[in-house]
Image (tube, rainbow, N blue to C red; front, top):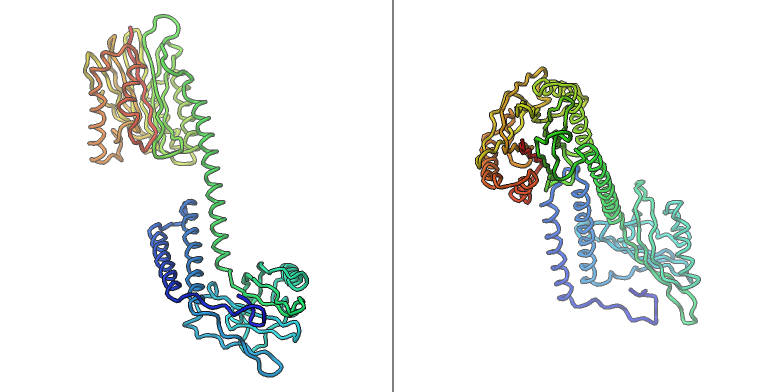
Length: 488
């Protein structure tokens, strides 16, 4: 707004009251909408994305409050010009507290007359700067006394450029109020020229933008925190994937064992990531030819997600392979795995199925720890094997795991899977009745594939059928499926 001392500019007239009232109504409706969004998205401070969203809402509310107050001032028109009495300027009386609003929304004005060295301040400016209304306004030479030392050169440069080069003022600096609080003030102004073109005075409007800048910093900090969180998550995901790929069997597609002599098993497997988490879980599958000619088949799941869990899975799988190569039977192997988890620094729970297949007798010896039982398909029908006793790995010290035996026939199909493929935890003390019912229904869907399995030529064909049935489903956890087809 032009200075009241400028003779060559007409006094600004406020716009039509009705149009400004309409803008105020719109701003207040928008404030209500933003506040509703903010309330509907509570945050406990643990999620970087929620913190960033809340900070954005806070910033928007600050700016809308600012807009609301400024429109109200625009509707009411400019404040009356300060008057002088005697040699010292007298500040306009501050409005009552009910009309003042927050410092964020108030705009103070000032004018410094270079010809008389007089200064005029509005009442709002006294409030913003924390000065007593009865105190005389500071001159341009005295104004830097309120400013932080490191910001004084900025203020000096702005004022000098305005007075000497007739440049507009538009900048910020920090002041120290008498109570010791530091506030950020935004100053806009311009010189007022006399008839011969020299600078007669300088006028400015000043606004306390401390809360606005605080909200902007909060948005910036939470955005940076979110980006760091996303970068860490991406790095963790990449490390987990690399670790998983390094640990899981290197074969892709079909595998036939033994690799020397008559092939007795046709194998295929597939890993399905979670559809609700970007993190890699602790699921594994494995098939390994042992030194005594038997074949190790195993699947398992360590609870949780991320690099630590994938690393724990790698430890368990390495232990399974090592003990199996040493001749450890499945029941004893499970007991030692349980002891291994029980001894870890960070408590963990896991489930697993471990099988040893003897090709000369076609005997399957297996044990389980809180895990879904293998499914056996024969002659176009399927059934779930009866599970021997075995609790979750890491659930209790000194657990004992029983073994079961099953004689297979040529053409039989054995399907092992982790419980992310179908809901429910079979044999787990954590299972609820609802989970068990859901798990039964989902396993029945697998068993219903028996006629199609009977027509399949390879284990890979059977895995493909399982993927067609379950691969597109929403999955809260990772999953593995391993299919072994007896060929001889």
